[in-house]
Length: 151
Image (cartoon, rainbow, N blue to C red; front, top):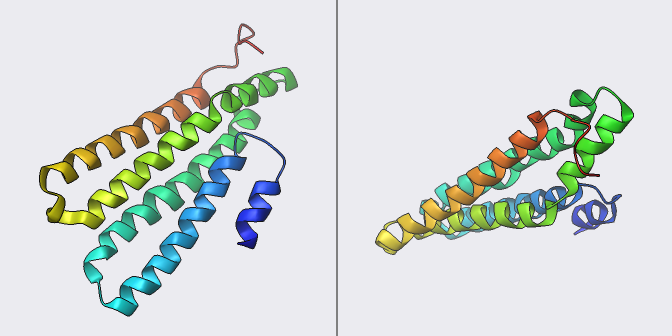
């Protein structure tokens, strides 16, 4: 897919991997919607909605904020660099955890009542991952660019 290739080829940064994954989710949701409508499986629209909101929209907003947070929070170039390093540190693990959470919630929504209590546990675990990563991103963006940050 050209969009994913372009995102992957972008300059390495804290925003690159989430951008790649939101492109993957966007294409999965678009093709999933085509299949759901073509096959008449309207019960799966909830799962597609979860994937669109958490996998695409929320991740796009978080990625944009990851990009602009250093510019908004850092008063000097050194402060901005410290904030960028903060976002880059652990970025692969955070992106993996977030997208695993989205996948779990989407699978639970797709399974519906057929999964019974296992689906509820899967959804809770997925939302917990999504919330933890989101809270961490917010904290990193709002934390002052102290001169004591490790470079």
